[in-house]
Image 1: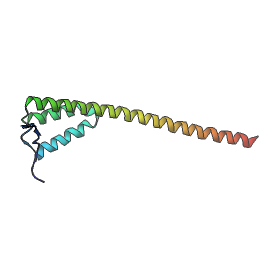
Image 2: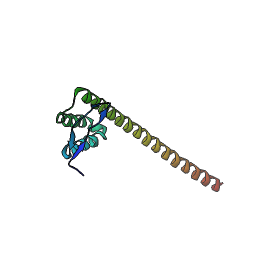
Image 3: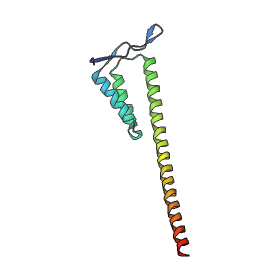
Image 4: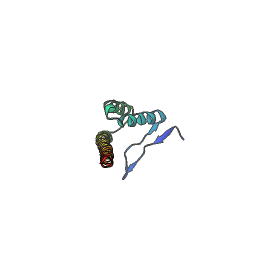
Amino acid sequence: MSAMHSCFEQNGTDPIMTHALTQNQLAQLQDCFALARNPTEQDAARQALSTLLSDIELNATTAAVIDALWNELLTARRSTAFWEQISDAEKEMGDRLTQDNIRLQQNYLRLMQEQ
């Protein structure tokens, strides 16, 4: 793999970005994504992305688009974490209901055998 990765993208005839990311910048970007996965680390993720973007020459429009997309990513991660917690709670409740139902059935069978 080459040391540079092109971020050149054509939008009609105007390039959106005309530079490449170094291996170090790609590693920083991966670190940003790793931090963004955990909602409790999102402030650190924002700071890490801000640091990375300050090292990359971007025009104002590109920077605004990246910022908006980054904020959407962080919002989506918070939403995902919330729904994962809801799902875990539902699973726990379902498991407890199943265990309680089994216990009730066993108690009923025991009562029937005693009579």
